[in-house]
Amino acid sequence: MSNKQPNIVLILADNLGWGELGCYGGGELCGAPTPRIDHLASEGMRFLNFNVESDCVPTRSALMTGRHPIRTGAMQSVPAGLPQGLTRYERMLPELLSEAGYVCAHFGKWHLGDQPERLPHARGFHEWYGIPRTMNEAMFTSSIYFDSTQVDIPYIWEGKAGEESTKVKELNEGTRRTLDRECTEKSINFIKENHEAKQPFFCYLPLTQLHFPSLAHPDHKGKTGHGEMADSLAEMDHNVGLIVDAIDELGIAEDTLLIFGSDNGPEFRDPWKGTAGYWRGSYHTSMEGSLRVPFMMRWPGKISPKIVTDEIIHIVDLYTSLLNLVDIDVPDDRPIDGVNQLDFFFGKQNQSNREGFVYYIKKEMRAIKWKDWKIHFVWEAEVYDGPKKLEAPYLFNLVSDPKEQTNVMTTENWARTPMLKMAHAFRQSLKAHPPIPPGTPDPYEPPTGEK
Image (cartoon, rainbow, N blue to C red; front, side, top):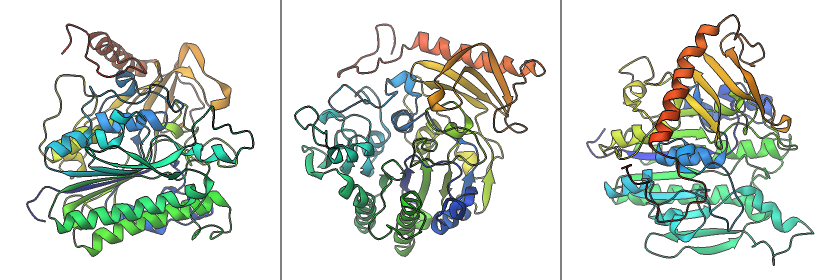
């Protein structure tokens, strides 16, 4: 490996459940083998206990800021035109990387603010192409009731730093089929250009599959014989393979940290319903099927191949770990929830630097995970059940009871103590550093008395 700063390629799937890839027990059982992603997993570290937030927006916020979304105000998806996303107070990952000399690009789904000053080109990315919000908007214009005088027609956009972003073409069910391939090809061109220019780069490829409507590229439509969901999974596998091939053919694998993961658990709506495999639940809940997602990292010479771990990692840890990787100071003027996991990733230690985490949905602390234990303060096993605040919390052992079906609070009451301490400490942190309210406009400054 050379002494230059490493390249970083981060591929984030959308609504890909823990049990949908072959290397997690899915693949052929889900109607679509995933040989390229499975092979990628074998070349590095595959995580069985990688955790995210409840859905698209909060996970992306956590990734980009290293902070739980209760702090940043980016806690849920809201319709176009309403205040949303991250304030410019947040020190986002691409902003810090750009300041350190990285060339940064975003190709895919953003979902962290659709106002001009909150789009990717204004948040550290030198260029971007994709959708500012989410993929269900591709269905808008197919409705016979759609009224463009009340709701704007959604578009695919592009932009560059220092310039205004512009509309490229309408986002509809036709362009939905081709967007991920376009973004993959643009990512490959970006990787090649910056390799030739000898520039360290951060390529962020937030794919839109398997988010509904799961409509595969024409090359993959009907390919599996098991419907659009399986076709879309096969397309995702193919696109990831194209990225891997580009890196390998350029001879930069040893200079490139390649990351693949998902933003949240599987879809719960028919006909796009996915699976969390071994775990129970879907996204928008506090079940393990919502928290745990497929995740893997490859970096030949740095990360050993064929490593499988059940150590707890949270997506906020990527922010802190990546900044430490390239010797960028982690912001110290605000609470950062991510911890540096580099020694664990690189095999210098056997344990994660994290024992657990708090889990919020919107403004409500729903659960806490600590080691093999999980406590629920609010119960919502399925999205359509609705949340039920518990008079007495439920406690589960995730090793003996992965489906979270047997409440052991009476017999294992001791295990609640460390988690209640975690809850108290986090709430005290929120008092000391008040959360940014959702919809807060720019400019934002913390309350007087806080840094």
